[in-house]
Image 1: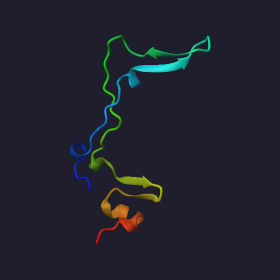
Image 2: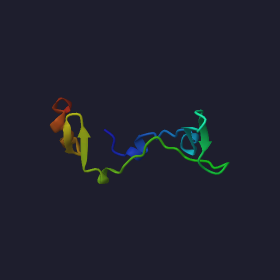
Image 3: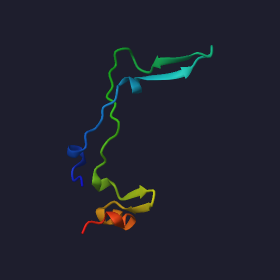
Length: 83
């Protein structure tokens, strides 16, 4: 189990160009990439963040919704229950 997501989960940093540029089709039918910001701007692009556990009240899974706790998960996944 993970008790401290910020300390225990490495957060992937993706290329900043992914959020600085966008591609689209121009009037001439050619797809072009354009810059969304002023030239020289740098951006941080984190792949995801870690939400503090105190802010999560439920978990949505393929088996249903449960309280955000080990006990809640065990109601949906009894095979994971530890003795």
